Length: 411
Image (cartoon, rainbow, N blue to C red; front, side, top):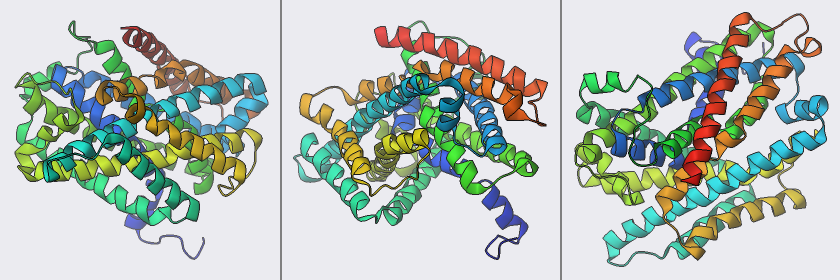
């Protein structure tokens, strides 16, 4: 055992679930807060079933991807290229990059809109969204350029964690009637508004392609073998359970405040009211800091996705100081200026950007299922009938979410 390996049971357990904690930190961001708050404000807790299914099927995919990486010692896209060919894999890369560029557009739109409203409350005149977008983009690019962004990301992660705790406590204060929450477990689609887009967005922000892609990198860095396969399953189960409760808490906060007042989330600042029962006047400052932290921390991996996928596809080391990679990061960052430059409603744009993720998910699920079933990949460890069944229903679910995403976006 390495000398720096944790020795106490508590530290060993914490170390074993760190990859899952990373997934929570990535998923709980501006997109999830906006989507869950909008769902709770518009439909109360009636879409709780969506959270349960999204968490369940994300868990199945994470387990399958962990198993695939452990068996092969290769990253996901590199396996796709080797088994399905370069053209199909390039299509997958372009689809994933498109969803993340759309996410950059939506996240920066929310961040700058919230910051404009907050500065307007403090100083009477809000900072223009374009000025805020340029400032935040230069800050993130500067930190990336000098390689000093890790401490900044750790600080942002702490602020996001505090916001998550605040939502959990507030949900306990304003939680809807238990019978209402139980009714929300039965799958049904409301007949008002555009629930198809919202449901697809809720699934897209949880079952995110980039999170699944980076899972293989995390498993490789962790060094798990088939002997630790059960540990990887537990890691995913813990993270998805925590993720469900945090997302449900955000929805419950909106259901207990905005929904009962028939006040949908139309502007980003409307989400502040979900924390008012706990923080009162401090809700504005607390929410703004939390949403800024969530947004800026999620922009970093979105910027880096292109280089990561390129390196994964070519089987190369991720040297983020390479001129090509730096150019790709700059281009991705510029997408954050689209809404501040050309206008648009940040909340609907954010929701629509998250709904793009299900468009490519059925193909992704199918590829992973085929790979874990291949004898040359599985070797002496073929998938169990339970995992086969799980992948089958995940494929059906992701196909239905593709249908809802198309219907919602066309609406």
